[in-house]
Image 1 (cartoon, rainbow, N blue to C red):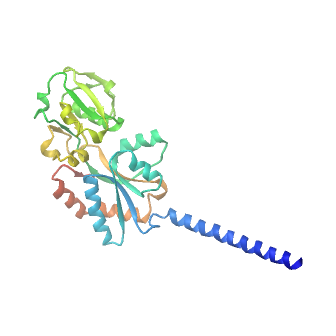
Image 2 (image 1 turned 90 degrees about the horizontal axis):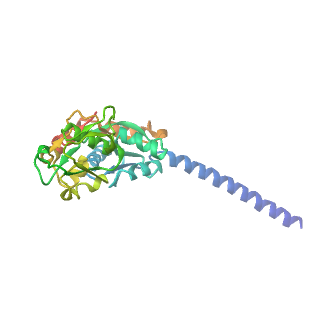
Length: 277
């Protein structure tokens, strides 16, 4: 009986030690998981098109500094931030500050800017006219359906002389903020990535540069009106607040904002994408 009891106590003790070991191991794994290079890579989420091309160049240069970058490509403006919040990526690049602020507010997130990237001047495109002045009365004009890019498009329409917005409507007005529409233009709000595909169904549309380039347009040549080069809508690198100062992210930012990458942008996109740092 005593031997059985002693054996039982030994088994319990071993199990307890094993459990403690498992907890410690799990804790260590948890701590390791928090490190951005826990799997040997810095994972960066980007939208397809120019951002992808630029980050692939950064990846090439970062490898020379022993920074292994994995590029994860998205085709919309929602999932890159969701993936960042859920730790599927460590960093993302696709959005402007107004979009980021609105997304954080709408979703209750706390994603933060890490550094400036590039500016994609939004343009107005048409398969039917060559000049915004030639748009007929009652023309259907497409614009993104998210508040930030939609507001940006409306400001672009105003700058092009097509409409007049209410005073004080800021950088993110809505269609309801149109004060003057002399030509009775009809505004069609669509998901940003769909606008190039729907262009033949519209007289014109305000399209983000990354989606325009992905569709085969050369913004500086093919747009019928485009934002000026001093556009305030610079895209930013974004991260979770607890990792924004991580050494890997800072190294990536340094490579991104290097002269080599600036030269690559200038030579590759010929003014359609502008370094914003």
